[in-house]
Image (cartoon, rainbow, N blue to C red; front, side, top):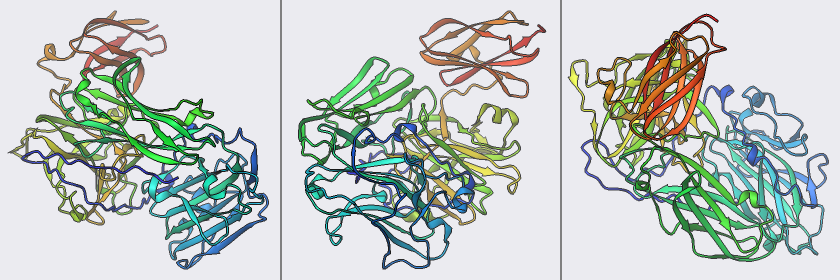
Length: 630
């Protein structure tokens, strides 16, 4: 199931005084994790269901009997680590929190474990001859359940009707980014009618090429008759037209780009289809802001093709803050017998003051920090790409935290993107700081909130800093210090958009190697622009949210909160104790401008002094609340 999408970067040419716009170097420098025990093994239940389970298989193979199976070493193989049939993951993978494949049949399953050997290379084949003749079956579907983490290796699936000439169906290098764990299990389906239909013999080959990489689990190989009508949105991408990367949380006033929707479609059904369309819609609840439908497409049984939106989605349509969705759906005249894989929904948001590649609705996540790489306990830099279409004033950088320890320290900065055009990004001097903060020490209150917002000073060590950024591309960066590993600090990362984020969306600097590495995932290092509210405000009347009263105060049961908004916003309240720990949360949702009233029950809150934070429009209003005795 090859990926047919090509990420095309249309480079915008501005005249920034600081940022550099350029076509990124087409290469990757990945860094292998040291703290592999905390590798985020992601599991998406929506992808775990085998869509072929309801079909009556013609033939299946679950490794409970190995008749017809052979293991062959390739010409490039050295050392050991061939394929084997096992009932559990091997100890080195168990110690790193990798579970066995969650296949429908359970153990046993096939495993190749490259991670167990730091020397030698793997070029190994697991070959299975199907124990059935397909002579009377013109339409045939192959399904496989798999689980792996990919570093830089290839996981290749091929078939042959004579064991001499092989046709490649799938290569992980085409569809899975480096340093990625796929859902456990992932079900692959292939309409192989054009190759295997009416053939007396069929061989299925699993080819692993690696060298001290990760692993591959295979189970529940199945041949079945495909349904009559079955389309699949095999892959999709949302490509910015002018910018370099997709941004999951846009900022009002910086929506100067367009999105192009691209989909890879396969006809898994036995019948040809002549009226296929890909429909795209951006909306909020039932309200549609943009729609697009491609021209009709015809596909023979087993056929694939790629389509693009006819009109591009203009971000400038989004005038209000809030959460939106871009929905992609395949349609045809026939009734699809497996509609679950015909659509996708990509959430994104518009914010008042923040830009982020992190999704507003995170589907899977992990973290990265000072414990991730040997020798990088102090001075590791995590940086995320962001882009401006209009000049704006940077006020802070907000970091969403993973598991961290109070006392660890951070320096935030905005960095140049010079170096993306070639392999200079691997050098120590690439991505120099344009503006930066002083050293900030993480507090218990920061940990309780789960994020820290570090102000960008107008001057640093007596030297003025220009916080006005011109249009262009930049990196928001966080340099992390753990006191030689005694107080680790981790940055939250998001895998929601991983399938189409370019590998240069986030980068990391390794002080032990004195070089930069690409990372690709959505690191939560987010620039904050415009007015930044501090707890000592001399201009509270100008804030977009104002807490007018909290009563009764002191309070013994139910507190009433009156507040005013001067712009539309999602409103959320958090009650914290004086140590910064969250005690209660109030979600008011999207609110229009004007006066509003909310309430919070304090029945389960102990007596004491608390701070009520009222979050709206990118700022926080705070008022003291006293809980009296019951």
